[in-house]
Length: 180
Image (cartoon, rainbow, N blue to C red; front, side, top):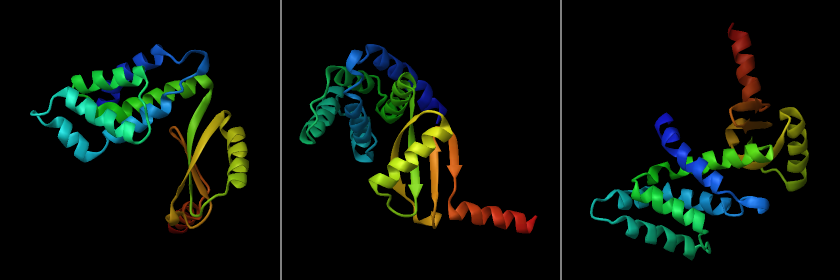
């Protein structure tokens, strides 16, 4: 959604400029966790209520994060307060995604999602990632998602690039070739 991306960009850039220093961005995972909380429909309904003060929303999210073992970094807490006060809680997942993209661009890496019909063990995943890094020409941070519809093989998404070597894709290619 372009509108959320436009809203999220200044927040992500400001947080990126607040910087992590030499130790990188150790609180990046906190931002991702808080963004996941913000995408909960019940929490958003609570936050959107005109009877609820922004401080109540912040306290609720910070309390849930604390229950999950997350003591919010001051930068993440400040961002969360600003987002809530400006009525932009719905943009928090997009802020997190854009922030992650900025961090990855700085480190020269990218996030990759590997879709597989079957679970991939760590050794096999390491081999796949090494091959994909050569293919895409950059360091990849891969996560695996199971998609039984692929039948076999893998489908890799890196940013806006897709490498699909699944059986499903090959069957679709055969279907197109036969009907053409």
